[in-house]
Length: 128
Image 1: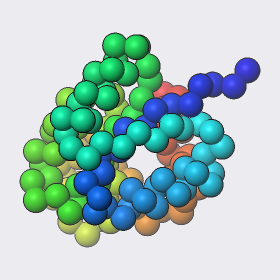
Image 2 (image 1 turned 180 degrees about the vertical axis):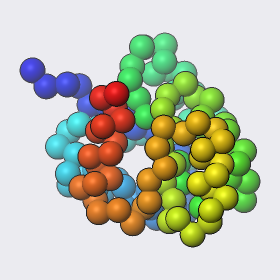
Image 3 (image 1 turned 60 degrees about the horizontal axis):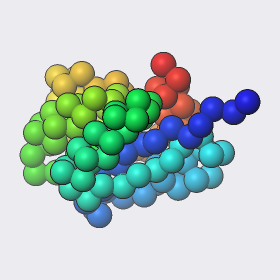
Image 4 (image 1 turned 90 degrees about the horizontal axis):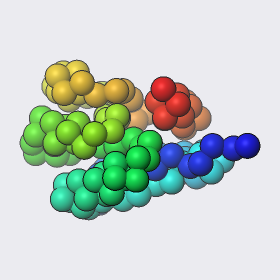
């Protein structure tokens, strides 16, 4: 019996190309293990997280804070959604890594990881 697809909530304001790469990676290597759900603003993300929590679903929240003018606030808000937070980053700004640590993110993943490694990391987080 296969596990149901894990919802992955992506905060995508339309600029984070690493989220596009992640979506492509999930499409190619995810084999139906994930359902990608996109939010273009924090209110939408919060609403989706609330609906999933009400349904007692397991989910992950994925954000890329590299292009965000207020990355610390973004990560703090995303961490409060009630699901494990995955922070994608190109690794060029050490402050993003520090912010991810400070909000207790479940993972800090470099967006330049091989596609299969990104998907495997998401799967490991969704199982734990």
